[in-house]
Length: 211
Image (cartoon, rainbow, N blue to C red; front, side, top):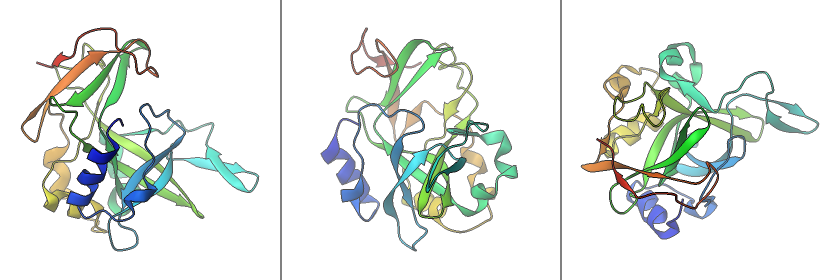
């Protein structure tokens, strides 16, 4: 994330409490701590979670489980996950990086101004510790040349969707129409720009519209 004020305004638009707890990082590594939005205390609020859904004990704390790589949750398996029915979350962001088998990394974002958005995700509680994953969909035909395996689930901008997603409603049928990738979000096109490395903030080419 590279626009702290923009993210804070974005969170305010959706009535998200405790924006001061937001972790701002330009590049976030899997298995590290990220900020998520939950409503487990009956209001949308920023909480911080380990980006890896399944954890294991590490002395008196928790760490990512070695046997279960779980930074993402595939949409085809959502029906098997109780978290999809009971503990959905949102992950605020302004961009994300993908690569093709670890090569040719690119940064994706929305519109000319890197508009903030929410990834749709799942979370779990481990005592006082939270963990999370991002839901992934099938790749969009236009993005397969950058990352052929998947595309993250992006929350629509409608407040009604945000409210329903964060609710404790276990009926998930209303989410089914959104389980497909889209390269337009809120009327803004998906943009792509090559980066030198997946963890780098240095670009190696021009930014353009994905089509």
